[in-house]
Length: 271
Length: 152
Length: 103
Image 1 (cartoon, rainbow over the protein chains, first blue to last red):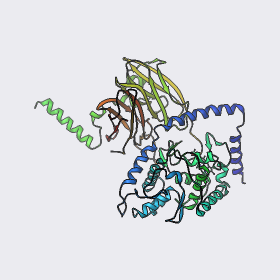
Image 2 (cartoon, rainbow over the protein chains, first blue to last red; image 1 turned 180 degrees about the vertical axis):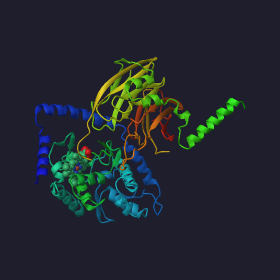
Image 3 (cartoon, helix red, strand yellow; image 1 turned 30 degrees about the vertical axis):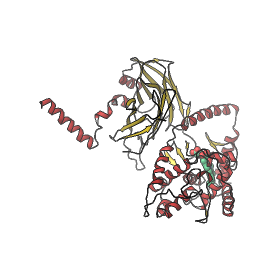
């Protein structure tokens, strides 16, 4: 470990342990306030506006084939949206790949609508092609709200994806020698007032996995899971992952399978 | 047509042209938007624009909001008046560059309870001002704004 | 024009609760873009809600209302099947009206 990472590790340890009783009390009052604040946001989540525009995109014919996405197979058969997100990522025989929602949407846009996925993959997260992907993800995820997360790797490729995701979660590297586990691998870790979910556990995995896509009040933006992950790579000082690459799907598979049995709360609302 | 009517028509046409060009907002639509009140930079000016002067502190006016906002960009606030004949409810943020955030006209059938979300640049008192039966009442609450951690 | 609003209205025990989400930037006029130029103010300044054709709420807003605004309020009367309509006008003179049915 270099000095920076020792410093940050110590900082994380302190915030996890909580130094003095007075500090703890003060923190708890603050934490209560924050919980009341989060509660007040639940009613009237602006993510609903993105669900509306996503539904419109889903149903509107587009692309060279002038077709809609209504016949897209998200894993429960062509056209079944209800409950599909709670069972992703999963193996798809037609592509012979394990896919998350966003990679599957790209497949459907290519096969049903004849669109070229490249501009969607390459666009920045704030550019119009990604806005389409995010709105679609908001709509589809909303159709699994309150459903049980059901992701149990069975197919050999699903198992391989889970194992890869787990390895990546603990893989340390980059200038600070960080892994996802540095920040998300202990119960009760906190950076200032941000609770960092313990992703190897079911509850923590669900807190992370089960609430994205989410509307972020800080920026007024809707973020998909791919964007969330992309930003965590940045926090880890890792090179930016390619949109819908296996690296991102593997981490999603790891989180989704850990969260299996908990409830989907999508689309979420976050700070 | 009388001279006055013609002039009026010319003025209307002129306003219409400006509106079409995007310069002014069609007057009819903005019957109640009070520029002086929304431009006010001090609490006194904002209250004056409302004709409120010094409103009386009242337990019948309530502000329901968490003590802390995780992010100042979105702060949920519910403003409640238990006073009979409530006509208007306003939400003001003392430390915002423009203090007045919103005003709501309460009709005879409207229950004087409104929920909105406001921006706050920093920790500040938030005031709910109520006009009921021609008189003004208010209450205030401090809402702390944390700017959040290092993520995102 | 803008994007559609999301309006929810439900009647219970003689009271109709109306909840509206609007899609709008609500620019304060105080922010700068990446090149340092001030982004001009642009926000909804009036909202009018009608229940069965009768105006039940008129709101005047400034730039301190959050992006993608949310408004919730209650009205005496109203029943399932009644029409709710909400109209906003913004500082550029743009306007949008959406409707919903009380459930």
